[in-house]
Image 1 (spheres, one colour):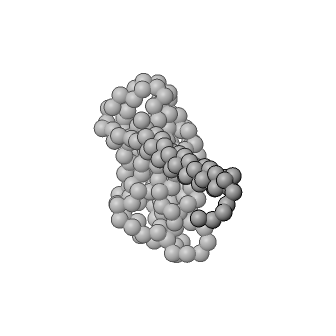
Image 2 (cartoon, rainbow, N blue to C red):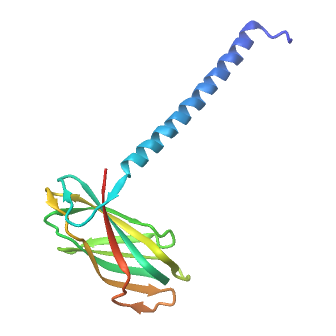
Image 3 (cartoon, rainbow, N blue to C red):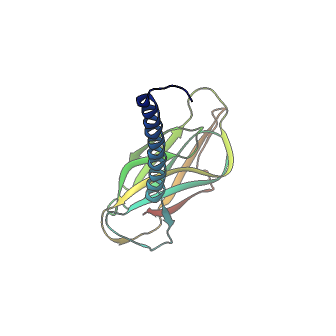
Length: 174
């Protein structure tokens, strides 16, 4: 055993206890934050004519059966603006197409997204394209929110109108 003064050994033990305590607190904070994130993002898929309560957050997930060399896209998301309020929460689910926007146009939301720079477009099957959040303004039975006028632009700048195979899935954040 070394001839360390008693205070030095006590300081080292105390420092180790403090470090251990900090690590435990960090782990607990991480676990708690993951629990909060997953509990706030839990959602359930809704059948048509589900009762929605005022204040509920309605999430519309947009899917495409097949994307081939898609550099950009645009579509109309049709909804009842008297019942749902667009909250400016719009998320691209395609990492390769990160620049996304939406413009409220009365009874529909014009949604578009694009890549930036010269590159090949995105391709995939059964793709989750993006999601949009609305807040219910009043209690009502949810009717289908539809998608129309889907257009895409390829990496070679070919423009396609009225593209088929895009669908919506509705859920409520709980």
